[in-house]
Length: 293
Image 1: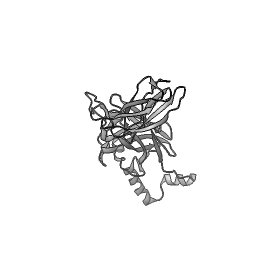
Image 2 (image 1 turned 135 degrees about the vertical axis):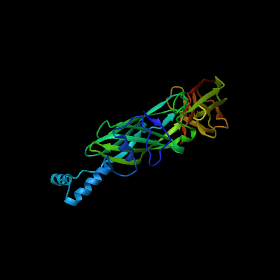
Image 3 (image 1 turned 90 degrees about the vertical axis):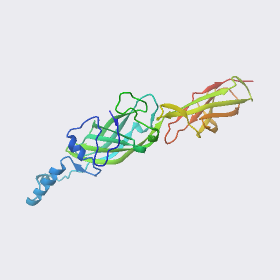
């Protein structure tokens, strides 16, 4: 399970829910370097001794076999199957993060950190399910949790683009740290309503379509009007499955929408909001209007 925490300093990387083997050694290895070993101090000492007497047994073995082990690599990270993570104000949201890479011995364990705007930070770790992929699940929330050490995970300022850092261990005891191997949008949930009237309406008469766009406020645990946003008014004729954009209207100071259109045929009216960098998309359920001759 993931944990929301204050991002540690460069010399401190803690806050894991799952304590991996040799925790102290892993803490040392969290420095952002390209490649380190799990026994760096010991390896350094052994290398010094061997330098004085000739080649090491490992080097001789590698030469004899004609192969040289390659460095482990992290090729990327996929968050929530490539989709934004949308969070409201009442429910926890879980999503997977898969780190992929390669090594001659295979990947064994991964620490995964998520970093967002204004100090947003989650961390967790996992054993790798295959030699090339390590998948873990994060849980985030933006609602009060009485009795918890972290009563609220998210604030409005945390919404936006997040990045993924990871430290991956291999089966032969080597680790590689990769910064910014993936990114995703962590966004505030939005909702839309619609009402078209009068119903029924005479053909050729004016139809008034209203609605309201609101989004989750992670600071107050309520939904509030989203102001100054462009929202599309769309129409789907009776018997069709396709909506067509009729107009684009901006929300007012309280998130309300209002416009008038000419009634031509029976069908459904809805508002459609594409979303922003901090807020997810929303579509209202179509409101059916009967147009009479």
